Image 1 (spheres, helix red, strand yellow):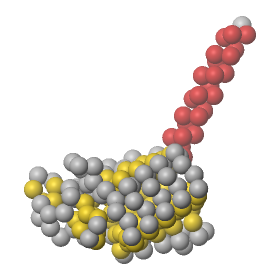
Image 2 (image 1 turned 45 degrees about the vertical axis):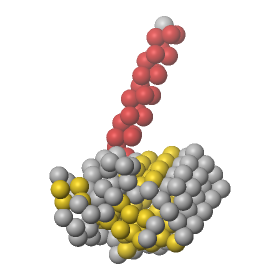
Image 3 (image 1 turned 90 degrees about the vertical axis):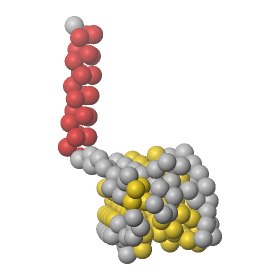
Length: 174
């Protein structure tokens, strides 16, 4: 599969608790997509984790970007917010073209497996520099815990809901 999820010409969507792997291009491609939320996802072993093209105001929070060729690609996309993400062993962590974004929320940044600075109380003493317009001012020493939600948990929750509705319905009839 070339791209796992494509959000194009849309806004205010939420993509959460997914494990997207093995795409030749990108796990998620945001194209002209504004004000979306990507949270608690795992993007692993893809050509790219997330690719933003002319997309603004997106929140990319608490995700794992692991062993992709590129963790995040940002092209002509400003005012996006990235924090509490783990960038782990991607060939390139971020590729940026003509974009200025926030890589921390003013207190918390991201974990970067290739950060070479020293830490003071689990926060990097120097920023993680992406390029001249982008840096994470609060690189985290420890990885963030990104919960993995298995299909069995979702299936169990759905079955419980069906059971509760069935019991309620039978009580109304009886």
